[in-house]
Length: 409
Ligand code: DOR
Ligand code: ZN
Image (tube, rainbow, N blue to C red):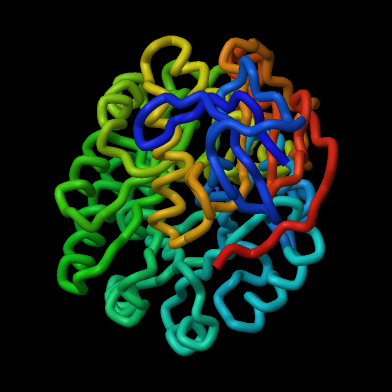
């Protein structure tokens, strides 16, 4: 198979070439005869990677499962997703990981990885399961998964292999408790304290840590004061704020960490050059659960388009998207054959029309939750085709084929 007239970034420069695919991998880049998929008028990304999604399977499949969630991924332009461990049961034992692996093997239609969860005492399970990454909740979030103490966090920092990342939900448990008791909600102070504590412990343990969904410029720059600390941002903290969007989000606005003020949102934009990745933090809940206070937003099907729209408004360069949504996640999470358009890499591609405008509608999405915090947003830039290991799975913005997703290790 050949992708004809592909416009993409090759070694930092815009190229217009054909891409030849054999056996699911990129076999050559150049100029080739023969028929293929015509990419004229489209821009080609390496298949995008979302390092932060909650696919809810097992245990919460009324919200999402590996099938609906990976369909949402493809539709949103992601060929690989990394799933979070706060399922039921949580992915904190070898047994739970093997069980989730089995389910994902049956249902997933894009490639995936499975993050493992850290608890106060599951050190032998982590060692037995040998997961590629570890997620550590420093404070309370959806479900009961938490590391429980700074002593346990430090022990995980020193025992988990140094060549694999530890992902942090950085909100300090005690600060959350006292702020909430004082009626102050989960302010940025909980995040700031968690970042400081985690950085200090990571420095002692000499290890890489990865801050998920960083919400303020202050937290991001504190995190980045250390070389081996990586920073992820999520679309909702960049495109929604408490001043601007609470009125229409109403009872759906809850998310951890919370949306911040408009001033904090715009300050976070200024940090984007130093940010390492985008994670959608796709955290679907039913509307019923949202009305009862559940925290989290679906994000897989809007993440890329929001950034393409920002590109169209000249506030974000295209290479930033390539790096933060493909290249860097692949490097950080050791996905050796993903994230680049180069010979030998998996033939995963996300083809977008940079000019097409569309309106976000919850009812049109693949996600089982059926709503979006970006309802009614008019976005310029849309996923048109997705190719997963050489298979055309999205065409004309719709899913046209399903192939078995593979676990990336
Ligand atoms: O808002 C959130 N929702 N924050 C999290 O940390 C977890 C997520 C979920 O799983 O619902
Ligand atoms: Zn999350």
